[in-house]
Length: 114
Length: 113
Image 1 (cartoon, rainbow over the protein chains, first blue to last red):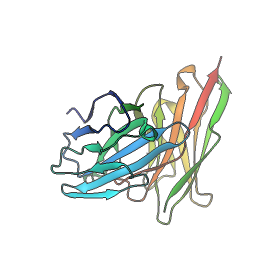
Image 2: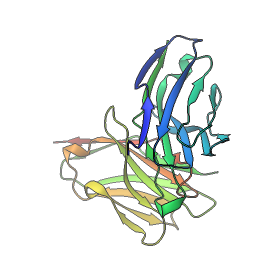
Image 3: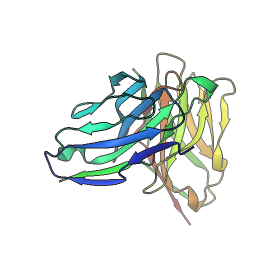
Image 4: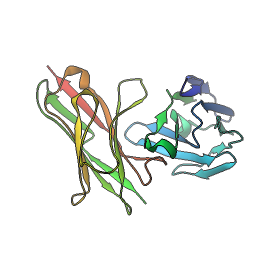
């Protein structure tokens, strides 16, 4: 299993540009989430999904869109990038089954908006 | 709503000294508690977790944590620090264990020779 994969690893955008951060998992997990990490702020939840076709907002959803058309993929879209979205983005997946009680994190995407 | 407070954004210890990183949580339901470690420019690694049962939880790299419901705490300890323990540590809480996490702001552990 590849686990949770994220692409790209690094990205530089100009203000106003759009892009999609990709996240995929091959563990058939029903739960997927996006977090952003900023210095001194820990990780904060952006959006999450409890299954294909179901998404919900987290703590800091403004400026981001998500959709979940398949169990495997959970892309994060920035429609008009702003410098405040400069951050490291982590995708995670988990499952209710098997009693694992563990989030599996991807390696992260480091985004800089100039 | 859940919340996590990590006391001290930076903790400095000498090699061989006790490591104590503090975490207090707020949760309206029985919590699931986690400690993650992040080495520079790397992703998150799970150190240990409390789900149910034994309140003293042992993790990787010699770390352990004790769940104290009366104190709403889940402090992380290690008897003897190594230089390789220098990293940022995050405490997190979840209401279901498999669902989303609420993180603390992190504590940077500095280890001096």
